[in-house]
Image (cartoon, rainbow, N blue to C red; front, side, top):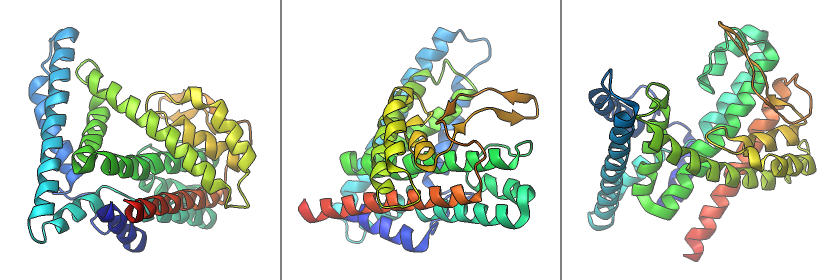
Length: 312
């Protein structure tokens, strides 16, 4: 708990200090590379779906076991080897992200105000992996707000709870499931079990993340707390899979927006359900409020960890 508190303190102050992207030795990059090489050897063209499903199930549990054991071993060494705790602190710090999404959201809002749609399209990839080339300015703003809601669950709630409950092994397991979930687009039968496990876990974290954002909404005058609560309760039944509807519903209700909706791609418009009944014309001001809500939510999680350190 103390290591998580220190890691969150460093990240709040220094931001992306460990450099989450473009580093092969980063934990997530190492996991993606290792799992990618393993699955490429096991997925063969012409294999039956049942065979791929069995192979994927076995692979999922083996990889989870290896990553969990590695995390437990590192945690044991950090408690029994002088200064080895610094290694565990670095690993925890590499797998949480508080300051960077908040800064990227504010940069996107400033770029949208300053340069209009071209600036918004240029800066959106820092928050979302979605191609914004065919999106209008309001769709870019909605995508940014939805990404803020997702990152709150993926980079804050998920890592903190996984680590506090199951230690470094749990944190590694959480990111292992995420990597398997990302690969599900290429071979659904092979990744079916990993996708199901990640979806169930992410749904739980999304519901908990929505509760934290509701508490954060009470501290921000621009956010409609009652509407956020109403939309959260209404969309609890939507929180399936990795759609992250609980936190998106809080954002939509609190900011008076309709999020989600049709997506514009090079192949045409793809229909998606709307979340919320507010305005669809989100703008830079809405992104700023969403970023503030994200940061307040992170501070609530930080205070929760600090209380756990004091009590336990």
